[in-house]
Image (cartoon, rainbow over all chains, first blue to last red; front, side, top):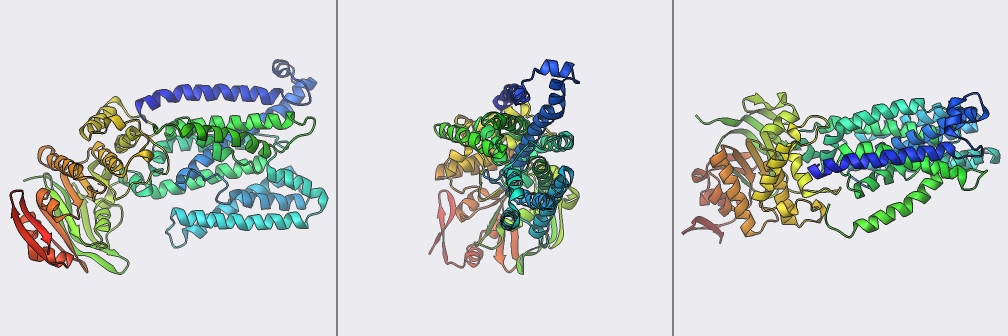
Length: 328
Length: 257
């Protein structure tokens, strides 16, 4: 928030923006068909053009949108729970989505129905946690966290049960879905709309998020309507997570690590953190998704595995470096 | 007539079934320095939060600058009344300057950055509290006393007429206790602000407060000027302990017998 901080925000966002473009280029040009972006755009009817417009572009855009949604949701969940270790899935949203998706796969449903089931499951879980934690009108962070974590464990049990009872043919698809997979991504449009809505709202709330991070009473004493803000954050973060899970299954680590990396890089003010986390979350997933197609080509890896493999060392490195100085 | 900043009539404050205050009448005027005394668990913090609009009273009405508290938005309250909390938790890293600048939040619009004026205010207060060299330090790495002074700096940066402080001397050494209380008294006298603070030290209360509110338990309260209230018999009743009153060159002092 300092002037220095403000001055540092623009360069940081520019660097992240450049990284996003590079990540996008990497993702668009990676795959079994070698592709020149310029040719593909100029000749949409050619094989290159078809691969580009029907496969690469939707997948790349979905990867960015999913990562960005997870980043924003993670940043907001961390503030809501006042815990830097919170991730978007901590309150069981993904568990509900997974159960919905697995049931759809088990029933042999198509992609559209699968997404509807996943989204429905996520929303159901969100409402369930909210109404259980809300109880008699008094919900605090601990109660919300406990309700969410317990419910997530319940979903976990149901997922295991579904996996155990399913025929082997379907288990493979289920596991891929559970590990996070973008290969089925066809249209990034709904996700983009949600990202725009959630992103803009989060930006407008950014100064209040700064205060809420220091505690509810402190924020209230400085003019924040904390009750309303809390509900808003919960709804926005859950919507973002539900959309991301519906698009791409469970992709771990992006929502936890993207806000963290930015905080370690000095962007602690949410006016810088929110736009930063959109770009960084999106970029991380672009790169991970590109690599997931490249590393064991022509086979593909579940992208969720790669986000963790990339994220862990990156995070540990920055954490190690940040220990050296007491200066913020 | 001095400006009336806070006005309470018939205020009841309850925690569950326990009465903290019953039928409390209180007028805080510009220039006054109030001290709230009471035993542990008597509800001092709860009363402070109620008067600051953070929780609703069980009965009665509270007016801030002539307007009923419940008709004001949190932002409007925060422009007139600032509150120092007993403890400061920092789950996320932030620099001292960032933390102090949060005091300007009630005056900012959405996604607006603090202006040069906001920075000037914050820097002046950091200077006054001897915190300038800590400006870029992470608040998570500060000592308890340093963190407390940062919290007080944030409160002063808020530039409110009413300053509510819950144990402002927490974690502070003797020098800094007196420095902070001197500063608060000057704010009252010179800037026509009003201070309402919880203290545990009767002697500091006697030295700085011109008005005192006692929470005697079971909802019983006693408010008045420091001279009226700081009587040995009343203080003995308050703390349930025999006291000895001493006249010293620095004023009246009380010691436990």
